[in-house]
Length: 319
Image 1 (cartoon, rainbow, N blue to C red):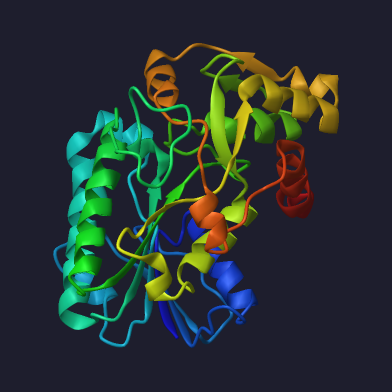
Image 2 (tube, rainbow, N blue to C red):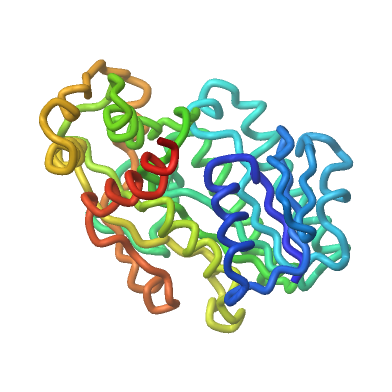
């Protein structure tokens, strides 16, 4: 299969590329095109082409969507914190570019499997205690609003038979390796990653704040799985809340303490950020993901395991 990943230089995009190249059992990759504003790192693999493409460029969609493209993983986005302070940039990259891609797919590759990563940030406000795939989206941030618009657009294109859309709403991903990003939930990785690297981490929310989380390894496998589900199994609503676990910030720090000790856990400091608090508090924390598991998606067991995944896969690998 010929596969394209947008946002391929990002943390999840690069992990997704590595996973696809390492295991051909789920998706046999004949060609993999990696797209990002900053050219993705080259691979010593003849199947891979890495390109620097600005999705805001009017010619970008025609470059990315070729008639022989079978699967598009569309991960590229302006993240929540940046989208909140720069509305125009968020609309341009998060909505306009997505619309251009799906419209080009309609014209040039109507059988394309269009796998789109959305977010639980499409929910907000007065939510039920447990959400599901059909809970109405009521975002209280611009990033969530832009993602929600894309969900509806992609679902409608699938309904019309223009493209084979698969939309997965990602929980907060923790623990991410590397530097902090512009997501308002970036602290959910920082309060674990930085202390494990001997650095102070600033947490902008209180210990009682709960988060709906998934590990990088689990979410990458779930994104790949989304492309393999038979179209008829998805039904008329192509949007799926991916499985996650509910953990408070205090429980995350206690898990860090159990794994790495008191001295490491003491490197988490607290400084309130009202904007981040407001947005994060609007997100759901409990999800009925029974539809997802019935379709074969998987879930992490607990947060201690997630910390140990980071230590094994990233911290130890970099030392």
